[in-house]
Image (cartoon, rainbow, N blue to C red; front, side, top):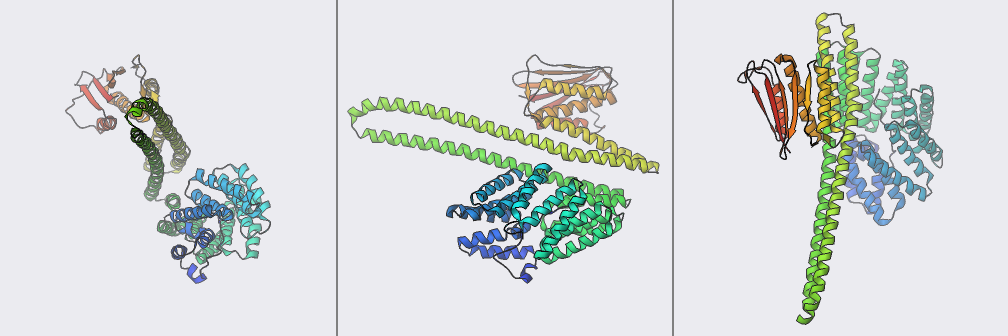
Length: 596
């Protein structure tokens, strides 16, 4: 599927010359930011709003900083129309950054303000962006309903920006639903409207969408012509993101047309441009396209290399974003704790001041009053302590809930994205193995497909371990028993203590991996007739014992792989250790000890 990029704004206000604009988005953004710094507040808000597209195509972070500044000025001066517009713009930049929850909040607030102002065009603009949001999360019925409202509102009093944008998003949705006739009719209507209004930048996106439909219908020469128009327009406009996307789409069209050699330089150029402007998601997509291209050119080593780079980049983006979110949660929690501590200190200072004031009333009055004040202070202090404890408990519960939500969100992402892609890889390898004629190639593809299957099984186990906040020994024992039933026909006996024990997701997953490794080694190398697994515990320690009646081994012999080292590393991660008792002919016992 070709990469999509929906146009949001046309430029107006705070204008630069066309020659300056065509130098590139970087120089224009820098020049505008310098102008904003010396303007009065009214001019600052107008310039930021009118040129928000230039700011965010250069840097999402710069756009958010300037947008927050414009929002603060608008709220301070009660400029509702300007506040509504900047809230919509901030919703767009949060949407592009992948922060969909905050994006929707900004959109809803902007819509409420436009309704209060009785501004139909403003309402239409926001509804258009909300339709794009629901398109992104694939709630197509809701998206189409919002866009239908948007087109009705955008038709009056102006149609220069709002109506083409709403039509564009609606056409993309219909294209994703494979309602190609309806989608093409909408894009043609949008094209005619943009040509009539002289909107060159908007035409670039329309040509890109028409090219996507032509490609889906196998009309490759027509698609290539549309994309050439889009690239030319976007280069003239200085739209570096749009140019990179259109060049990538040209490569995808040529690849689908069966011309991988012609597609390769387009993907290489698009990758270079996406790296220069920092479009990480586009880079990852192009890496996958390069993998497909080299596969079509019968260069499996290069194809696998690009696929691995794509997954490495995806993991990096995923981990960076999750780490940022968790760090923000931790900072917020620490700030709340410091705020409560400061409040307690202020209360204590006020109490001490009251005591000093009362001492001036005289010794006789102090004796009488002291007892009353002291009792009141004790009551207040106890109340404050109870409130502080309650607030701490609420804050901790809130953090725990947020962390659990993050775990569920991560597990869904792993299942929906990485799991789906592993399934696709396995299917593609199966088809390729059936098509292969050389036996070495068949064996190699079969081995890779088996590795993909193992990765899928490990992914399922990891998702199981992170989906909930707490596990019990019974949960872990059931999971180990299920694995043992699949891994061996030997009888496996599992014993649990009478007292139930709670485990964290990290403890659960690492103990499960240790048990997996041990069972596999016992089945492959021990020659055992049965396996015995015993969980035990005391107030300070949890123990897991795995033993067999097999042939044992010489513990002084270090050859044979990294299994024991891997298990020891997992135990050390949990603050524990592993000991092995064995000798030739005497069976083997592996004992895992973890602190509680």
